[in-house]
Structure formats: structure tokens, C-alpha cells
Image 1: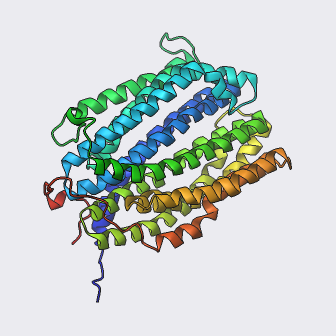
Image 2 (image 1 turned 180 degrees about the horizontal axis):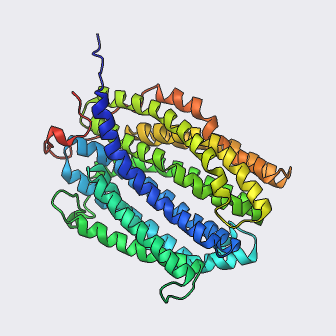
Image 3 (image 1 turned 120 degrees about the vertical axis):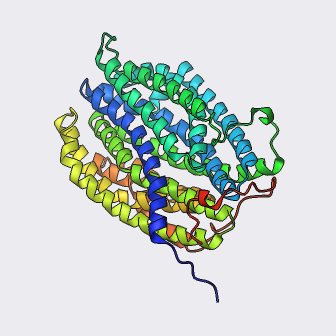
Length: 469
């Protein structure tokens, strides 16, 4: 008879909090930059706020590529850290830096050479295009550095240096917010730059973030890139990395381009709908920080156990984390509804835009249930065991075959109200929950992805955070 796995709940929750809270804080601080931009520019003019919100969709698309690369690194990194193979972790770091660097350079040149063309994807109003283009020319310099910083922060996260990584992100964000105020409003003798000021603040904070990552990673307990063998990567490891990265890239592009399509659809309905959607998007990102933290922690916790060969424990933790995701979802729903009046009165909007924002917040409240469940279950548990193809399949069906076509037809053929179109854009997360649960119960994600590249280093058992044998 198979031995039943008994989870030490106290130890489990202690480790979940230890991992999830710093990651959630890191996610919150990053979302706070967008919130700070929206609030500060919202005090200047609605057009400034809307244009910058639309322009940052370029970075959102870039982040889809970066997320796939560092996501593959996190999946393999967590399992190899559980196994105790530091050399392979260094090689994974090298691969992340190489591919993220290529992506960052491409987006940098796009923002510098063709910002107006990029803005026309998301807006039809000439004033929004002009403001957004001026933002991108400056913000493009920050896009050049983002990829490298994300590689360092990801490696810190999977090697139990979560708190220092969160501290670096938090410091960079706080600097960004302070500089936002200085350059947007022209404080402390600085010029009043408005949208350009938000871009300059972002670029400076990214420089500081990368410098902190490099300096801190010089410590003995940190994994650093092995530049001496930067292009000397084993064929097996490259194949394993590609096997995780390509499905993640497909899923990230499906999700990222789909989300920017939602933004573009709302942006072309009208300025009031675009303004309300911009504020709603910032709120959504802030509320999602907790589920993002738990999702990332889930991937680390389950990945450690699977990589260490304790498949039964990995499975038990995955089931527990999936159940927790429902509680986080309902908590997020209640929070969105509670803060709706406060959010509506926080920024300067037209009367029509305020009505749209109120309706969007109510719709978003129900969307949050699906978002939280799917983030933890798919991006955390399933991905940790290499079941990365399902995310792409589910997005193709729920987003690209249902939500986006329905929103397009509703907006431009049937001329539905902006709230009805916005509701269409929220269908994908809630609608696929039953499918996600069916996939979860097949337990294809319960697998050890590591290979014996080199002998194990025997990391002490108390360094593996969720060992409860």
C-alpha cells in the first residue's frame, strides 16, 4: 500500500510565507510604478495618463519574451538547486543573460527608431500618439537593462536569496516613484517634464537596479554567471532549456499579445473607455501581486522537491497550493469591490469615464477568481514540473478563439457598450477553470527534469525549504 504523505502544515505555511511575501512585495513594488505614473499623470491631464499607459504596453510585450526566458531558468533552476548542482545553475544563468540581452536590444532599437509606429498599434488619437512617442524614446533605455536585471533577480529567487532580490526591486521602485514626482511635476528645481519625466525616472531606476544586482551577487552564497564558459553550454542543457522556454514563450506571447489586444480594442473605442481601462489595469496589477507571489513560491516549493527526487512530496504540496489559490481568489474579489469607490474618486476623469471605471471594477472583481486560481495552478504548480504546453493550449482556446473575437465583434461590428466589451476581455480566465482542474488531476507535472550533468554537491537538508520527511 502506498505511503500517505503527511504535510507539516505549520512548516509548510512558514515556508510559503517566507517565499511568497518577498516575491509578492517585489511584484507589488513593480506594479506601484505603473500606479504612481497613473496617479501623478492623472493629476496633470487625462491624455498624459492615457498615453503613458498605452505606451507601456511595449514594455509589457517585451516582458512576455523576458518572462519566458527567466521562467524556463526558474523551472530548471529550482530543480537543480534542489538537486545541489551549482555548476549547472551557472550555465542556466548564462543562457538567460544571452537570450534576454538579445530581446532587450531589439526592443530598445524599436523604441528609438519607430516610436510613432508602435503607438499607432494602441491608439488612433494624434495627441496620444505624440505624447506616447516622446515617452518611448526615453523609456527605451530602461528596456535595454530590464532583461539583465530580471536574470539576476530570478537566480536570487530560486537559490533562496528571495529577500535580497525583493529589497533590490523595492529600492529601485521607491527611487522610481520619487523621481517620478520630481520630473513629472518639476520639483526640487527640475524641469516639469510630465510624460517624459516618468520615462526618465524609469530609466534611472533601472540603472540603479542593475548595479545593485551585480554588486550584491558578488557575495559567496550567490550564483553568478560563468562568463569563462558563456558560450560553452552542454547540448543536453540547451535542449532542456528550449523544451521549457519555447512553450512558455508561446504561452507568454499568446497572453501578452492578447492582453495588448484588449488594450488596443478599448483604446480605439474612445478616450473615456481607454482612460477607464488604464486605471482598471493598474488596479488589477496591484491586486494580483499576492497571487503572483504565491504562484512563484509554488513553483519554487514544488520544483525543489521534484528536483530532489521527492515526487510524492512535490505532488502533495502542489495539491495544497492549488486549494489555497481559491481562497486567494475570493479574497481578491472582496478587495476589489471594497476599494472601488476610493479608486473612482482618486484620479481626474470625465463623468463618463468614471461610470465606465465603476462598471469595470465590478466586472474585474469576478475575473480575479479565475486569475488567482490559474496563476497559482498553471504558472506555479504545472510549470514547476515541466507541464508548460498546457498554458499555451488553454490560452489559444480561451483567449484567441473566444474572448478576443467576441470583443472585436462586440466593439466594431455590434457596437456594444464599452462595459460589455470589457466583460468579453475577462472571459478567458474564469471560463477555463474547469479545464485547468482536469489537467491538474492528470499529474503530468509530477516529474524530475534534472540530468546528471555533474555529481551532486549535497546541499544540506535544512537549506531545502520544504523538506518535511
